[in-house]
Image (cartoon, rainbow, N blue to C red; front, side):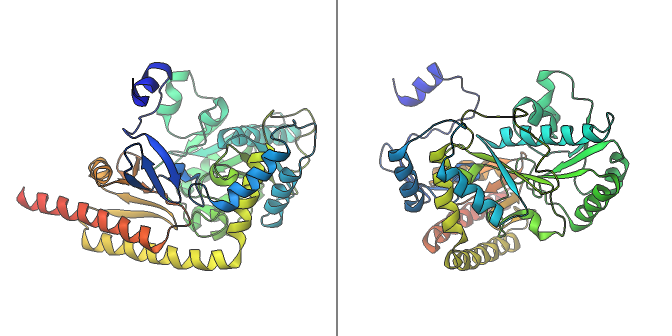
Length: 399
């Protein structure tokens, strides 16, 4: 029995697997059991920030594993403290709570918001979130998520969470009042088709937050850590979060999430209010330190800015050449969505040409390459995608 069949037999398979068995991964390349190489634009769904098996990450992890892999949160671990210090030093935050995933970090943020509100008034327990937003699959995070299909199989919606459309200022004004404890959002919606928040909406979030003492709660699980060109995506706007969640690439490839807390809310959650057995695992945090130290190096940021600019120019060129196929380009940096009715067709053809692309929001090809994307990989990507778009164009002409 081959591995794919065994997976179907023994694993509760809730995912749409690719017909591919990976034997090795390095950089942006996956090698299968036959020795064929695939260019990976899934990026572990934005987890492989520096690509697969980056030496800076592996070195930090190996050293930590040789010391100890787990002690529990009754003990201080230097890698956990070092990662928290890096995050605080380069953000609005004063404190960091570590979890195992983005969903768990969002659960902690949900509890933070509710406790904050209930300390002010027993009625201040409402949250406003966005339609098509995605915040995870655990119970609270699922109810923050704005797509009803994720929630419907599991009963009634939580009555204290209201969902409004992204960038609808009037709906935002109507939803937020004195009983709102928090406003939750992604700056760019990862699962929701890469729709981006505009400045007018962000400014209104800030205004209403001040007016009603509602917390600004930003989910940067997918958009954070230079994915969109800035350390955090919200830095494009003047608004300052009260709390923010991170995960995905934070652990250098191992499970790790974080809740970053501003000075205004750093004392809301007290000992015993929340916890996690594996949260802040020393090995995952060591990988995060290696990843962040690499990202924050001025030479890396200089190269990243150049490569992102070249990528953006290439994408714009494809949109200009094939407007009948690519109807819109969304996102920024290395979090880009190509809107097209041919999304699944492009994904399937790319797989045949050994380029791995994902589709989200039904009609959006989502591009999440590692931030180490080099000229060779970029050339391969554009050559394959251009060939596919040309094939589709010729088929359109033939009717």
